[in-house]
Structures are given as structure tokens and as C-alpha cells.
Image (cartoon, rainbow, N blue to C red):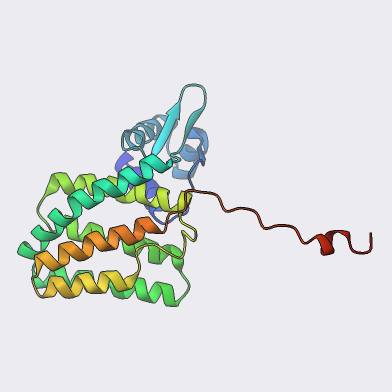
Amino acid sequence: MLEDEIYERMVDTIRNHRLPPGTKLVEDRLATAFGVSRTRIRPVLVRLANERIVTMALNRGASVAQPDEAEAREVFEVRRLIEPTLLARFVERARPADIAQLARCIADEEAARAAGDLRRAVRCSGDFHLLIAAASGQQTLDRILRELVSRTSLVLMAFASRPQAEGCGCTAHRALLAAIRLRDAEAAGRLMLEHLAQLEAQLQFTPEEPAAPDLLALFAGA
């Protein structure tokens, strides 16, 4: 298996919310899982670390990154800066086939949610944004967004109150698709900013207070 293939498999697993923040990435076990030597695993981990998806510490090995509140807000701040630009370019350049692909992505997400396959639904949510970036023609921002979508998955796993069930959601994507079909870049950009703000609003940085114990249940009959 090529290093690029290992990289894509690991990124896919994170985007599918199957590799939580803090998970230890033991090189020997990864090498066995992928059927390769450790020397093929280390460059992949370094690449993921450079993208801030993995952390590597001396004498502690590698683990899936654990974003803090500042990093989570930074990720959304950068997404708000670049995604309206990507979207505007997409509206200008998109072919009917590109728009049809977005529609299929939304349909796939809706089908996944209806089937209770929340991991697949979350993946489809991220793919919607990546499809726009890929067809925008802006390769640099496309590459940056790919990293940010992976980091967003880690943020949602760490801080969303219901990370598996939330994701972006189909309603916001359908509104964006409607504006795209009208070639209304201004409306689409506004909807994208609103959408990202709503997604960030799902985050819960303050731990919930534990429920007060039921004293009657604790001590009755003691």
C-alpha cells in the first residue's frame, strides 16, 4: 500500500468520526493493520502532524490531535475567510455536472440520516464543502480547506454536544444549493457564513454540570 493511500485512509477515518481525539497511534499496530513496515507509517504520521491532525511528542509517540477552544474557534474563523471565496468561484465556474454532484451529495446525506448511519451523514456533510472547493479552480484554498475539514471533524468530536448526529445538516446545504442554481454568489456567500456560524454554535466548551443526585434514591431505606 502506498503512503498516499495510508494517508487517505487515516484522514477518511477521522472525517467519519471513527478515530477520536487523543487516540494513540502506535506505529507497530498501524504497520500491521496496513500490511506495511513501520518505515512506511512514520512519513504519514509526520504529514498528518504538519496538518495539525496528529500530534507527535518525544518519547510519547503519536496521537490524534486534541483541539482546544482557541484552535476550534480559529478553524471556523479561517473557514469563514476562505469558503465564501471558494463558493463565489464555484458559482462562476460550475458546470451542470458539478451542481448535480452537490445535489447527489445532499441526497446521500439525507439517506444516511434516514437510515441512522450518522457517520456516513457526517462524511457527506464534509464532502459537500470539499466538492465546492475542488470545482472552484482555486487549488491553494482547496488544499487548505481539506485540512480544515479534517480538523473540523476533530473539533466536533471534542466539543459538539452530539457530534455524531450534528454535522452540517441538510437544510443549510439545500439553501446553498438553491442559491448556487440561481448563480447568486452574494446570497450563497451570505448563506455560507450563516451556515458556518450555526455549525460553530453547536460547540460546547464548558462541561455540563453533573446532575444533582437524588437524595431520596440514595438514602431511602438506609
